[in-house]
Image (cartoon, rainbow, N blue to C red):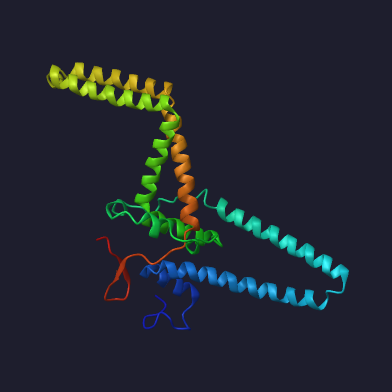
Length: 254
């Protein structure tokens, strides 16, 4: 690293300080720091414009030009926000996800997952949106999985034919297992494989005819959109972590 004694020293370069925040787990500080820097830059750039407008308010031409520049600035800001959201399309939100994220307890739906209005803000850059998505997907992996199951159940409820087809497929394979135990198909592997191939073909036909793939795709699309929007707008908050001897945070999975 570029420093060893005091990570908060004013002589530390910004890139080294951000790297230290990432490595030690203080991602919520990095998220808030990005927001504060953007607000400072916005205030600095807008102050001279306000002063010029106040001193030349009597000039109608200057006022009209200022109004046009303000409207153009609003459109530019809108396009920047749209660009930030579009950058999430090519982002892989599961890049840092692992099996351990599903083994911990499910975060509280009201306090942790939803939170208050102060817990949400528009990502000010694509890097901040990427940071939020990767970290929030890890933190709320079990919540997002539960939402997918809920959306899939709602999709099956709206498409009763798909629900009937899914139940029929489950019943078909359960019947095949029951018949295999009763007929002793373990001693007749050729006949068993033939029945399995027939059951697979019948399952594919039933699923296609009852529009189960359509229900599954709609549930995946809705749950993915909800996950991306929530993860990108949700501010990073301090997670349940413990501090090691070297001062770095360690996530407590207990």
